[in-house]
Amino acid sequence: MLTRLLDHLITRSDHPIFHLISRSSALPIINMFIDEAKIHVAAGAGGNGCVAFRREKFVPRGGPSGGDGGRGGDIILLSDPHMNTLLKFRYNPLYRAARGGHGEGSNCHGKDGADNTVTLPVGTVVFDLTTGEKLWDFDTPGQQVIAAKGGRGGRGNARFATSVHQAPRRAEPGTPGMAFDLRLELKLLADVGLVGFPNVGKSTLISVLSAARPRIADYPFTTLAPSLGVVGLDRERSFVMADIPGLIAGAHEGKGLGIRFLRHVERTRLLLHLIDVAEISGRDPLEDYDVILNELKSFSPVVAAKPMLLVASRIDAAGESDRLVRVREFCTERGLPLHEISSVTRQGLEELKEAIWAKLEQIPKSGDPVIG
Image (tube, rainbow, N blue to C red):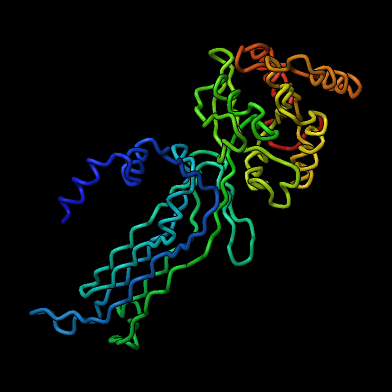
């Protein structure tokens, strides 16, 4: 029966299943970028103490010899510069450390439980899921903290021997390890963040200036996840640029992709606001400017107060319209510097990189907002 069905599909190339199979090889591989996760961490419990007495030939009244239990393993969080997403925590949200071994006779101490080191991307902020309290901010590579301390091993009966109580028959149980529910939030570390409406040339710009290869197409919301690229001016000067998915009016109310990705520009020192001046855009560039500023303010006044450079994008497609002229007049009236670029013809890109570097030199790296 199966052979007849396969023969039928092969001879009939117009069968729907045939077309579905033929298209499957062309389906894009989706890069899962996850910037939020919830995990449970549980340190190991301490081992129990032992009740034992020494009994050997020629050793009368050997006395108590119960050893202590080993300590439980800790849960250690470590920032790893080679990670860039929280994807693994979606499929494995539970992390436990080994418990300590129990004490044994002959005063043998129980084995300490092994620690469990959980690696996180640099830029991860850890919150207590129950209280919402911010616990740690992993903003540097190699940073580590003990998130949950292992339990203490119980004492064996040898510890309770005294001059008046030489044969104690009691021992302590090990204490349980600490356990917490945590919420992880990833904020990418970049010097410059690209903001603007969808399809204004942000992904094209970062692909031309750096080795980043975001998805680029001629329809809105092509970029569904942030991407990073290193922009080099020369051997000694470079900065990191972040491409953020596009914003639209009402994004703070959940329209479009919302504003959840804007957390990735909270750490940036400079914003690059791209305004599309292409004739085929169909939107008012000055209205776009106001909409983006309002969305930034709705998300966070701190983000809206960050230094910003205004960039007129896709000037090669401006055509005969007055869009670029209006943007120039607008910037002149407000005293805003305007950088005109075309990622296709590479016009103005070198000047833009130098302007970005000059602005970054004026902004401290502490991340504090500087009005400029």
